[in-house]
Length: 261
DNA sequence: ATGGTGGTGCCACCA
Image: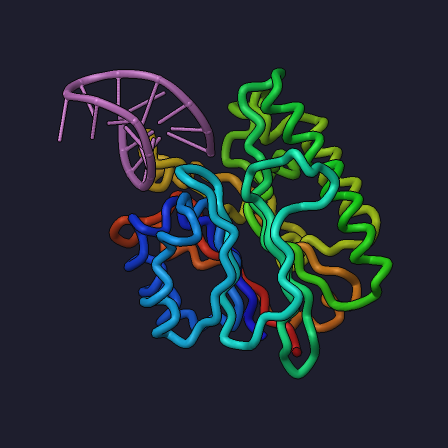
């Protein structure tokens, strides 16, 4: 079962970018972030035509997440638990009924800039709620994949120029510590597992500005976290870097994991 | 020093 994450940066503006990638990459399951649209204006048809079931948690203008799956989706949950007043559409999870059932959670973690400030406080509060919910997943002892745009640069080697990020919410000790605390419970950072000794990169995001892609001035912020039971099923992992060089690209590229499920 | 979106006709907000 090939499971991917893709921050699409506006799905209506980039529907052809998405369908082009889907046709070639043939993922079984995809979590999307920053669809930037409400459920009723989501472009269902071109995606359904490629054989996908679709579950959307949309929002006008900003944020918005979705799950696409060639297999049936069951027990869909929208919104991260822990704050009934949170209006932002950043979380969707569902069970994918493959040869084995896999719980898939797609997330768009708050950016948190500028820091310090209320947006950074929201980010850290959101990460605390994520940690609690992730602990619940581990207690279930089933295969879980929690993937998406985490908006956290885990280590200096996850940025081309880490010194440029010292004042940014994505690279604060509090943000990195919160991610590390989640991982310490027993989650596997699948991309890092695949390239444990890389001194720089791999990257998943390159800014549109100042020729960041051409200079390979990237960061690694799109992460795939596997519960122990999911890590045991991992066959392969990839980052579709080539998507960043195509027409009308997102600033993120797809990251995928293949599980024996 | 780019790009999507939305409320309006170029500008603010968010990344």
